[in-house]
Amino acid sequence: MSSLLSYLPAAARARLRVLDTFTEHEGAPAPDDAAPSGAAPGGGVSLQTPLQPEPRAACDRCVMVPVHPDRDPGAPWAFDDGLRCCTHHPAVPNFLVGRTLMRGGPGVERVRARLATPASVSAWGIRAPPDRPADTHTLELRFGRDPDLLCPFWTGGALACGIWPERTASCRTWFCKHERGFDGAQRWWRLGDLLSALERALGRFCVDVGAAPESDATTDQWLDWYRWCAARVDEFDHADAERLDLSSCEAPRQRLVALRVRPRSMPAVLVPAISALHEHAGGVLIAGYSSYDAVLAPRAIFAFLALLDGTCPWREALARTTRERPDPRAAAPGLAHLDEALIRELYRIGALEPASQT
Ligand code: SF4
Ligand code: SF4
Image 1 (cartoon, protein in one colour):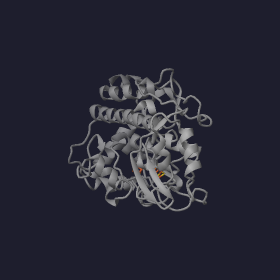
Image 2 (cartoon, helix red, strand yellow):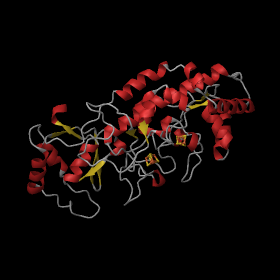
Image 3 (tube, protein in one colour):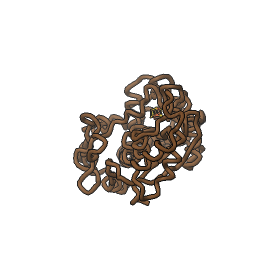
Image 4 (cartoon, helix red, strand yellow):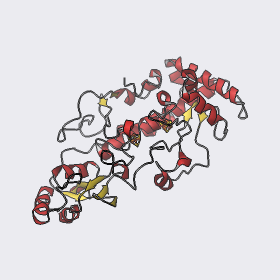
């Protein structure tokens, strides 16, 4: 069983069998044209699905912070170095708060500081206060950039998370970039939905079986309660698991199982499916499934895209573009090249898709 999932009790995971089909990644990613590992015949999540590593999201030197020449050049879709993707308030269930307290370290002080603001502190755990923006559009504009959204458990520095071993599914399964583009992102998102539902169920279980303090409890009473929850979940067994209300896990479980994985071999005919563009000194940034995973292309890409009419094979369009409209800057160091590797990248992020999908 993957260590990524082992923060949740084995007996609870066993009730959601699909979780036990995920394993640690073993070996190198599949070659580009190979069948996607984890794709069951006919699609879907197979038994022994490896959890895909995401080396493009190199958090130790955050690739979303624009420092040339090594890091992502994605401004204005770039993040602030002091915020990164931690402009998020996770909903931390009681037992994970308790584990943080028992582990000790900088997370304890962060939990205490968060409890000083009682909004959304409860027997279930610590949720985001109601004054945080909820709509996706506002969040997308401010995500990674607005210090008002910084996570209360952030400690700063390279290892910025104060509750890292106890972080929730929302943090465990979020990456800015995905080795397999939208397909990979979907697998993480759906797995995150299911793990979050299980976290919520375990938090509710503790409330049901324990003696939680009243809502106006003191900080010390909350700390004691959360420690108790951690100890209770540590001894969680199969009898407990049978009592777990997993009704809210069923819909995300079904969505995870039903995931279909797009073939990785590129079809001969592609059409544009661009969601956003941004002018950049090195060319143009092109987004497909997410602006966080945008790809830098030379401006000659527009001539190439104009040829993708749903019948012209992309290799023919590429040959015509590079023959008829060579980009004078394409060969300059540090600038994007219009070549097959770039087209594969645009396909990876979903900015190009099979003609038959439209
Ligand atoms: S996942 Fe977050 S910290 Fe890691 S590279 Fe992406 S934005 Fe930076
Ligand atoms: S819990 Fe940790 S990883 Fe998650 S948003 Fe907060 S600081 Fe970042």
